[in-house]
Length: 205
Image 1 (tube, rainbow, N blue to C red):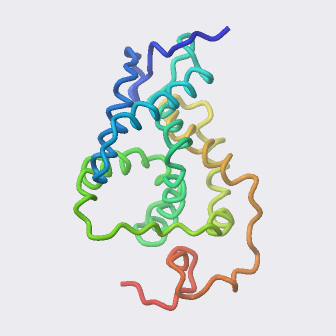
Image 2 (spheres, rainbow, N blue to C red):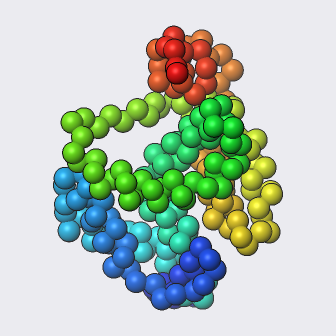
Image 3 (cartoon, rainbow, N blue to C red):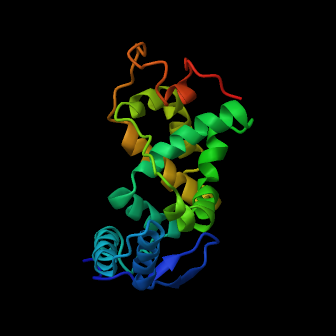
């Protein structure tokens, strides 16, 4: 029988520390403040949902990692982050001479920089545009799924790459049920996704 609450958590360096549920609530509240809509009640309710998901999966006998906690938060509230990861894997490969697996492995550094340098200031923007398209995941799967499979296999027994392995498993579960698109002619040449899959009518410098 599982314990009714999480008492410990594993940091990225492998150390085990006491779990403080209030940190999740404060992080959600900080994000809501960053977009100009602070809501303590909503942050508390969302944090409870995250905590319940952690309890149902882990328990005190099997403490989750920091990446596990982030995974639960993203799975419940921010699945768009995986979509951005896939786009970034292609962009880094084509423009930064960095392999897709390297991007996936270092993604937590990107997220940490976002929390520090972007999210706290995005409420100052005149407009915020959600550029995600409902049909882009099958297009991205066609180009990246093999790297996700390789990452799961490569880091399966590597404790130093536990966070990358967990991330790869999450993206694998997201993409596996999807059918890839063979004929991409239906995607307009001015669609933003063309920046990542090719065939854009715009010139990029």
